[in-house]
Structure formats: C-alpha cells, structure tokens
Amino acid sequence: MCYAIPGKIEAFDNKLVVVDYFGEKRKAYNELDGLSIGDYIYAQGGYAIAKIPEDEAKSILAVWKETFFDLQEVDLKLSRLNLNQESVSKEFLRILDNAAEGRELSREDLRVLIKEKNKPALELLFKTANFLRQKHHKNSCCVHGIIEISNYCRCACAYCGIAEGNKQITRYRMSQKEILEAARQAIEEHGFKTLLLQSGEDSGYRIEELAEIVRQIKANWPALIFISFGEVGLDNLKLLYAAGARGLLLRFETSNPKLYKQVTAGKDLSSRIAHLKEAYALGYMIVTGSLIGLPQQSEEDILNDILLAKELHAEMYSFGPFISHPQTPFANNPSASAEIILKVIALTRIIDPAHAKILVTTALETINPDARREALLAGANSVMLNVTPVKYRPFYSIYPSRAHEKESIEVQIKDTIGLLMSLGRSPADLSV
Ligand code: SAH
Image (cartoon, rainbow, N blue to C red; front, top):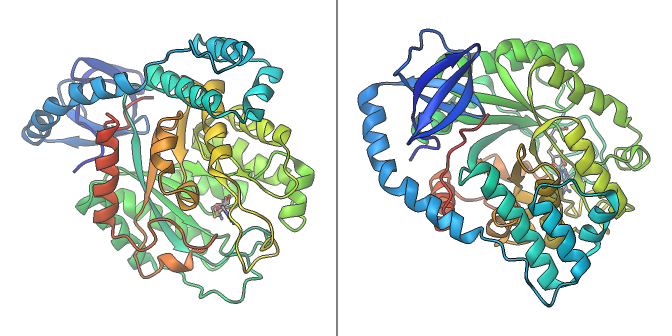
C-alpha cells in the first residue's frame, strides 16, 4: 500500500510543479533535479518527493482508478449538510450557516460553539466542519509516520511522563543506525512518504548528529522529514533545515503565558513562540497546537490556542487531550474528554477551513478508541502512525497506555486504510 497517488507533471511554475491526478490539478514545491513535463512523481505535504518510473506509476494508477472516484462519492455522501434541525436553537443554526457559507465568525459566535453541550447541536457542529473539510480538501487524508527516537528530556513539564523528574521510567536513545533502519523500513517497506522524528529535549544528541541523521535519510530514501526535538535553539533550526528537514512539530502547549509558566516549571512561552516564528521564516511547514484540558485552562484559553496556531501559520494543527500520568505532579488532575477535542477540531476547521490539515492525535484515540473515526468526521484530515521499534514504544510514555502501543506497523496500516476507505478517504496528501 502506498500513501500517495502518483501524479503526472503538466507544467512548471517557478518553484512549483503542476501535477495531474485523474484530471484534478494540484501544485507542489519542487526541490528535485531533472524533472520534465510528463514525468510521474509522488508529492506529499505540498512537496514533490520522488520521481517514479512510468510503468510503475501506470500500474499503481490503474489500481487507484477503480477506487478513486468511488471513494470520492462515499465521502461526498457522508459530508452532506442539512441545517434544518428543529431540536437545535436558531442562534446556533445561524452561526453554523455562516460558517458553512465561509463567513468569518465573531469571537462571541465561537464562544457559543465551544460552550455548547446539547448533543444534536454538537452533531451539527461536527457535520458543518466535515462539510467544510470536504468542500476544500476533497477526500484526501495524510498518513504520516512518527519515530520516537529518544525519551530523555531535560524539561520538567508537570503534565509529561517523560519529564526529567520521572525516575521510574526506563530511558532510551536510539542510535543513528537504529533510526536509519526504522526510517528505511517505514519508507521502503511500508511506503511512508513523510516521517516525523520526535524526542524529548535530549541533550544526549549533538545537533550535528541530528542533522546528520536527517541528511542520511534524505540521501537514501525519498521522504519529507519533519522534526520535533523541542526548543533546539534558533540557529539550530537553520542547521536542521539545511540538512533537509522541512516540517517542525512544536506545540506551544497553551497560549496563556501565565499557565504555560505554571505547567512547564517556569519556562517562558515567548521562547517557544520565537522558535515557531523563526521556523516559519526559514520555510519550515509548521505543525502546532496545544494541550487541551490542562488544569486551570479556560474555554477562552482554548479559543486563543486555536487562533494563535493560525496566527503562527500552522499548516497542520495538533490539538490533543491532556491525559493524567500517575508519575507526574498532575497525577490527580482529570484527563480531558474526547468531546472537547472534537469541538476544538471542528472549530479549527471552521476558523481555517481552506488551509488546515488537522491531525487526529494518538492521545485522543487513547481516551476513546472510536475517536479517530469521529474526528475524521468532525473536520480532521490527517493521521500519524507510530513506526518506532515496538521494543521502545512503551518507554515513550508521555501519558500512560497509549493507543496502538503494542500494534505492529502492519496492523496499524491495515486498520487505518480500512477506516479511511470506509469513510471514502484516499490516503493521499496532495495539496499545497
Ligand atoms: N520535545 C518535543 C516533543 C514533546 S512530546 C517538544 O517539546 O515539542 C510531544 C507532545 O506530547 C508535547 O508537545 C505535549 O503536548 C504532549 N504531552 C506531554 N504530556 C502529555 C500528557 N500527559 N497528555 C497528553 N499529551 C501530552
């Protein structure tokens, strides 16, 4: 199975290539040498990442052609919207109608949406978000792989199970060789086109080592590389970009500076924001968001989180529930509900309908196993599968009992593809 459909180059437009997928045109940035009109390529995350031989492309396309239009049809049916519902207040329907029509909602409107508790109203909110997702993104859904390369961390965040203060977990740090082998398997054997490398803020790797790992992956296999090593320093962001990293996943955790300081044992939010701004200026794709359900976090904070992520040019939004970890200072604080996360996903889609890729996080699936499906039907269009070697996975315990922790990558892929197909989504990521 592959996670991108081959496209045929139709034209060049400066640094962009125009690619045809069964008659639909999409654009992708091109950093590959030697491409010509008529060549077949894989594009991912808006980047051309590999040229593929014509024969191979044609045989893959022949398989896809049968399902491509069927899937679009299923998706279209599932995303129809009917806002004539008597059990929902006129005021709520008016706001959803404005959202569906693409009008900007006021802060007060967003407040009404996030505060809503009535089930039929929430169902409609989710459907409106799904309608907007389909309208702007059709049925494409990105499927990315994550390798958690180390659980060492110098930070003392009160919510996090791998924080420095947790002396009860086994620490691990994958060697360069192990990381390259995990990347090879994910790309070569399983067809991933985008890989995220993540770790705690680990002083055990020198920045040059991390850059070399990124360089080696890029030199050996076609893939888009995202990094998530925490605050590496502004200059080091530049170094990692030069090595070939093109995406940065860095949640700001909360947009409330006071709350941020409290939950991170005194760190300054401005430093994290500075990293996100610098990364954007350097050309990184920004993946950001926050932890929802932190103690003392208000609904206003959550609305600000979504707006801040947009302001920081999030290309992909990542909002997940806080899950209580027994070996942290927040052991006695309750985990967030799946419902609030679905609301945040739907609001994100409404606030940034045309642009946003919205991730279904593993944390959400951990609190509710059906939530991946629910989130994909509430505005989300991106999933991440864990391709960390199984033996290390239990130790990356940012929160306990993570979903899919014990599942082989083959099982995760099979289940994900099955789910996406049942929803009419094609596991492809083609838009700029
Ligand atoms: N060092 C990287 C990666 C940190 S782990 C960085 O700083 O970005 C990735 C994410 O896990 C964090 O951004 C945080 O939002 C999330 N996380 C940590 N503890 C959690 C918990 N108890 N429940 C849910 N998510 C948690």
